[in-house]
Length: 240
Length: 264
Image (cartoon, rainbow over the protein chains, first blue to last red):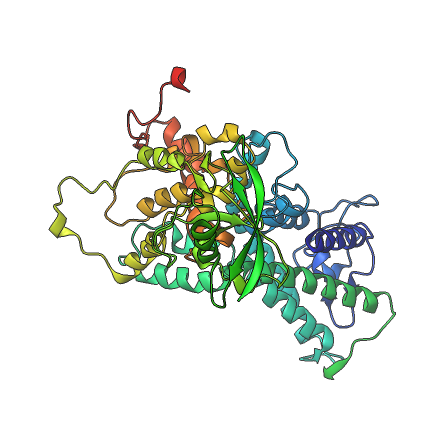
């Protein structure tokens, strides 16, 4: 129940925000919400489009971050933790351990529609690129303080924590663990990859935690930026 | 000493029923102790499978208040003072009598897995394994074959028809263990998906939750095996290799381990 509510809250909030096409950029400090990164539409504020724009005006209800959002969504949908979460809480297969499931037949992930779950690794590769972009988005505002130059505000800290959580979630992914060393038959012959695998395993054992924390920090970052962009609040500046 | 109500499954799977007993319970006892007292004082014909009473033989698997557990490792102190303790046999396997199941499904599935296949050019004394490789498969070797994981897995627990095509977490873990063995040369990835039903697993982690040995079955065996299957079956480069003729050598299941269709 809590899982369903948590996922639903995120989906409702994210859907409302990505289709809003507004309040995504704080020009004064160069804060860009992760839900609009990279901003691709011709309508995007030029400074917000750190990686260029497509010379096409996006019609209403088309997200400005048209490229990254589907990848991020599919990465989370095919994630081994989220699969467990929604198979249990939404699909009820099973509702809980040892509780009879309500379906008459069950084919798991063997049918063509569900075989797509095996593509998790490809979404992982793409999401690493998007997380690098998010990291860049997070770094840029540090060099746009109130009087120009280096500055730190609450927004910077929120964005920094968000990026930290995104990396912890992305690198703790089971596909990443497999690619880094899990696919090997022998760890002894590949000490560097074994070391990488063991570090990833630390993150991987907390994959659920980082999955939820990253959702929370994504929403917090977006909400904070949207409040500033709409003029509701001003950034709490700690330095410059 | 207190008295507790035990509701125990009596009879076979089809003609059985839950029967209530009031039985003495002492401090520090486990469910299996109480079942033994029941057997000694009230129902001498109660069938209970057990052996070590130390959580190491995997014999006393039952369902206690609906959860698959070892009766020798379930302390009476975990229940409320007036809570009725319901003990039923494992639901996934046919009941022989009372709390005893026929678990031969598991042995049939075990036989189908191609055994450890070292390079024929090597002899037993040639192997040198690093500690980290030993540790990796050592986790899976902790398995006591209590079959609680196979029992709780909804793929076969709720769908009898899947038993033919699904080996259950226990034996998919065995496949994963062999696939991770540095000296093994067989390739079981194709059969893991096609014959042992890796695709049926939807990684809902109940097997890990009930494992009395604390083996992280899903994270360390099933998901890595799913990723290995993806390497073999759902990787475009491998597909291209297959198409132009560089076909990897897949190991088939052990011959003559599946019953002919007419006997089913």
